[in-house]
Amino acid sequence: MIFATKSPYAIIYVMSTVILMTVICMANYYQFYKINAVRDVELLQKKWIASIPDNLSYKVTEGCGWLRFSYQVFRSDKLNLYENVKNYETKYQKSISELFNVIKDATANADSLDVIYDTKHGFPKSIRIDWKKYTDDDECSYSVEKFKVVGTKL
Image (cartoon, rainbow, N blue to C red; front, side):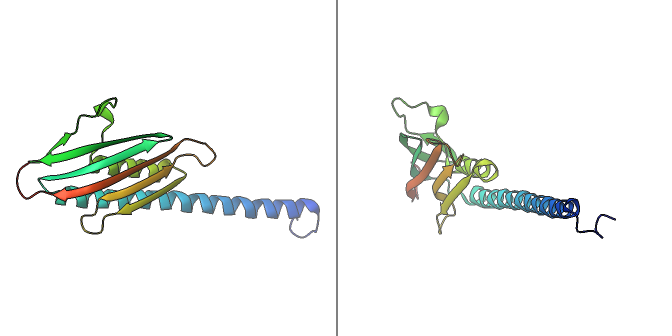
């Protein structure tokens, strides 16, 4: 019997089994954590979508690596309008609802993610993402500033 001896093979077998089981348990926990974290972000996004004011404005600053862009977003009668920014393609401009999608993607795929939510309205005020730990210039950040609910139509 392999377990009745003190042979090196028995010790290697037992230690290998313990290490393998530990790795499997850690991988399961990690996947479970990621799934729950994405679910939490989805709940926050649904809460935000359900409570978006019809008329508001805010400024988004985003960037990856050394590039930084800012643009103003105006929401009037449930329609988002973006400030026309020179040298910046409008297809990359994001609303707050789209920033939640960035957070979900980063939760599932990034090495590190740091999000600060607005306590009153529940939107992400600051997002910092490091997609790969040992890669330079892959860090991205987003910030929402000058958030203002407008009582009348813009």
